[in-house]
Image (cartoon, rainbow, N blue to C red; front, side, top):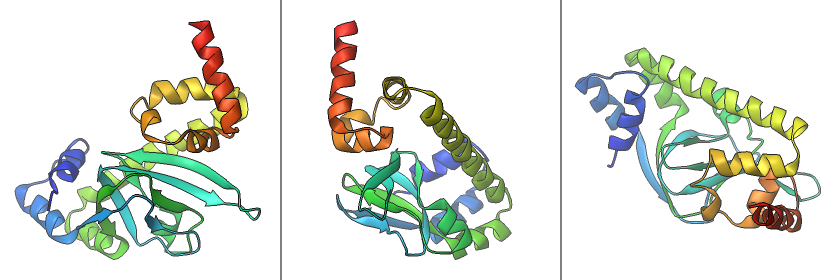
Length: 194
């Protein structure tokens, strides 16, 4: 199982002994998903917190009119799941779907609790990554309220240069809260401004 990327990621936050690394390796699940497959669907309880080894996912919800609203994308070396559902073990508000064939390492809720007891510093690690995600989410909310669509697009492009080429334009438009036609108009304007 290609666990090394996860161990390298954890090492950026906390240092695990070889024995602790072996324990993590023996308890997590490596899984491959095909493009289009769901990791979690709205209404189901999210069973795993997922570290992406390769591939790309989108987190979105579908409103009562059937309209999709993309909340986030995730690529290599990122985490994805419906965090609220995972932490509370209640039905998910979001769908997480693979945009590409995706390989990930999954940690079930129960196993994470076992790991916390066995390796207390992992609790600190998960707190740190959840805090990091929370801060990013808060910044996104402020940007959505205070910036124009053009400014939001520029920030997305600068912040996530590796993602734009990998996702369909209609998904990026949904993430930005605009139509794909309006996104095309913004891109044309930016080309003219160069």
